[in-house]
Image 1: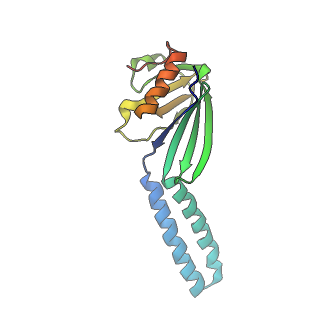
Image 2 (image 1 turned 135 degrees about the vertical axis):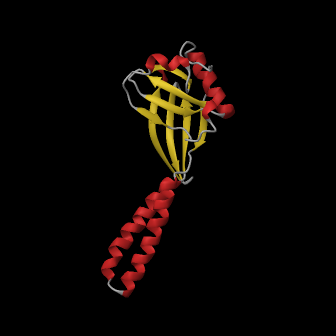
Image 3 (image 1 turned 180 degrees about the horizontal axis):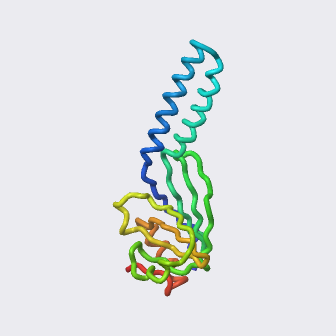
Length: 169
């Protein structure tokens, strides 16, 4: 069966600490610029550093995750400020152990398994019913939000290729 490419975009919850850092860096940059013109141009160095900090904090203040299902792979990308797209990882679904909703009893055998956890979810408590955990054979745990029509299609396609490893509970 040819599925082509299915994409899901998840809006990540805004981090208030990053927003506060963005505002503080901008205010400090303006203050250092005024001090540089009034006292000494050596204060332009911290002003430029604050501007660089402002730029990177601004990029991280609005982040979306994009999951793309292509040829038994899930490709995850991070979209910053709806301008910049950065490919984060490609996960091979032939190495999948289980895909189940968060809190499912199907995940119990993997609770004590070592491995790193990567959270690509929205981070809000509203979408918990559409949040799934994907465990790979190397112990990697992915937390994904598979909401909406395309999320259901991705689940169905993965379930068709691995019917004993995908659970909807």
